[in-house]
Image (tube, rainbow, N blue to C red):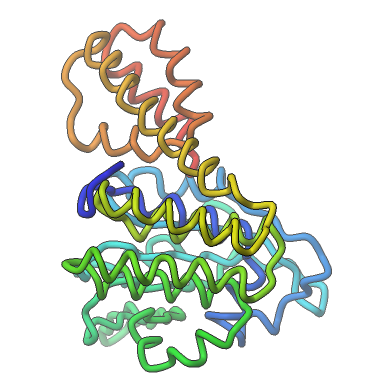
Amino acid sequence: MTDVNQRTDFDSPWKEVLEAYFPQAMQFFFPQTAALIDWERPYEFLDKEFQQIAREAEQGKRYADKLVKVWRTQGQEVWLLVHVEIQAKPEENFAERMFNYSFRIFDRFHQPAISLAILCDANRQWRPNRYSYNYPDTRLNFEFGTVKLLDYENRWTELETSENPFATVVMAHLKTQQTRQQPQERKTWKFSLIRRLYDLGLQEQDIRNLYRFIDWVMILPKALETEFWEQFKQFEQERTMRYVTTGERIGYERGKQEGEQTLILRLLQKRVGELSPEVQQRIQSLTLSQLEALGEALLDFTASSDLLNWLQANQSE
């Protein structure tokens, strides 16, 4: 089990939960934009299109980004760029980067994008929402929608009574921030938030999806994690639920993924030499299926450039 401050790939569970509950995310965070959209029509995640305009911007950073094609109620196609800023500290050039993304999308695809940002940092004063410049004959004012998760601290009762999956996401994020140096309290909150999923009467797949998010972000030291598993298993047995192995399956998959990462990193270092921290972080952000594909591909690598080319071609998230 990873120690409390070691895990770095918070973007992975954010991307997963955004994909699983995209309409609910929009309705929860950006209700005015959500009201423009015909949710009866299918929406499409444009991961390859986003990779084309942002490939050089993500390296070594902690973002979760989704470019999504939806349809307005009047029938027109519209693109949404949803950016989750997961970095612990504010980024000075954030507003400029949001503008760059928007401009690149328009320049490459001749399609404007509604730009939206979810800010997960702990700085109450940092609230970027525009990029602008002004000269006598030329001016620009680019504004984008933002939500600050920290603001939900004052809306806790509202979160507790909401059945929107993103109420759980926000609660888990806030309690993770608040218990950075309090692992015992984090364990208590982790159990409480997971028990709430059952109390809401959610379907098994919804419980598993949200459980996975909570489990990934609310990291516990190994001893407390063991205590938590025992407490959780007893809880499921008392509820006579058929989800008894839910946690074990998720824990197994995570352990399998972390083991695969260790093996792949060791093999790559033997094959192409020492890896930079940035490249190691990119490998650690791969899904299990991507890691397995890399494990086969690396047999043909002869230089570090082969690895970088493979990551460029296959790291679409």
